[in-house]
Image 1 (spheres, rainbow, N blue to C red):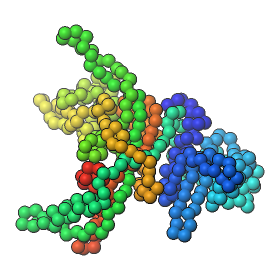
Image 2 (cartoon, rainbow, N blue to C red):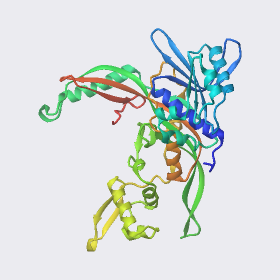
Image 3 (cartoon, rainbow, N blue to C red):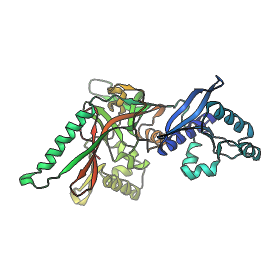
Length: 397
């Protein structure tokens, strides 16, 4: 990421924040849309947001301006013309700055909303607004696709009824049996980030018959993240799975130490002090890694605390197969029900920089299909099961 982001980078970051916002508000959102108006002129639109009602579809044209200077009346007049030509219900112009008095006056009498920095912060929070001004890497773009489902809704119903039958029988002598009724099954798409990265990895090279050396290499790789939890994912024949669930909870210092701890070797506090930390800091880092599930500890000889990795750090992201590495994808169906990302794309970029000293070239939002099974128990309480629409496996919540 550049030290001083360009206006393009800041503008793109703001647009992506607004895409997430309108999705959370229930709109169907198209980013960087092109639409031909009644005049025959094609208009490029930052964000086109549509809200489908039983008797009417509401269309909103959103323009994002990440400016240091105020937005003038010319921008307002241009948006007014686009809204009128497209027959949209209203237009919204959003800025991280503010509007000139002439711009505010020009908007009067038109179906326009002006969101200045203060108004934007009410929706996003000041920290989120500030993060857009740090920008995204120049080549980053977000494109949305879905993985093709294999199982149909009847398959999901059959799998769920089998699960209900097992729960209804219970364990030994019927203890622990649960009586539930399947109310409905809905195909729902859950969001994942797929990131094309230039990552730094260490490789062992032979330098002689009995000697080796460690060399650093820059490799091109694609990695996946759960856009709801921030977990790293891997995809195989069993579907999509989150791995290293503790990783997202580690501080920068904890990640630095954990990356250096190899295999099942044993470490003590003095080994961490050798990395340049004070004894107190080393103890705090190791205790944090134990508490968060990355390490386990036990007392060795003379009462010394010995630390050992529970699992190794994913130092080579080439081993982490992502969704499009394994599965076919397609454009999002118009009738698809999908959950918007909860984790911001900029947060994923920070994680990649931290985990693999990586540079992000592109981000894609891919939606993975699951069947959401709505259940009701004998006492009237409700819960859901989520079944992978490709592998048929029950997703752990």
